[in-house]
Image (cartoon, rainbow, N blue to C red; front, side, top):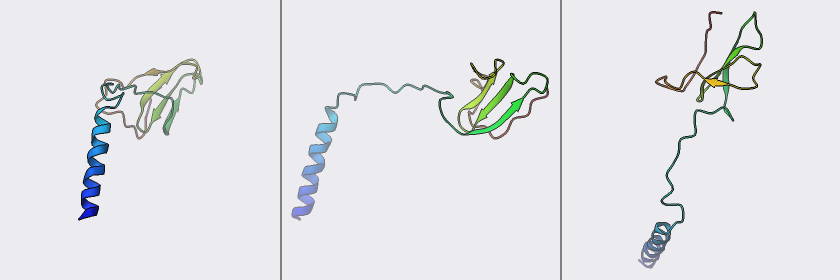
Length: 91
């Protein structure tokens, strides 16, 4: 019984301290899709222009570049999902 009472008191103290957190009112912000990390699942390169290609990330959407990867543009922002498996491009 003493153990249960001790655990209840400890849990209550932890709960009270969590309510006074300095970050409790900070809203979560979606920063994706992004290409800072992730698993690349497919790359489609233009055979006539090798500096132009698409990169598909497993959970980060589809990205396009025409300057050999110096900058990318997301092409799947309005897609119903950001999960990619494979891509096919008819160049």
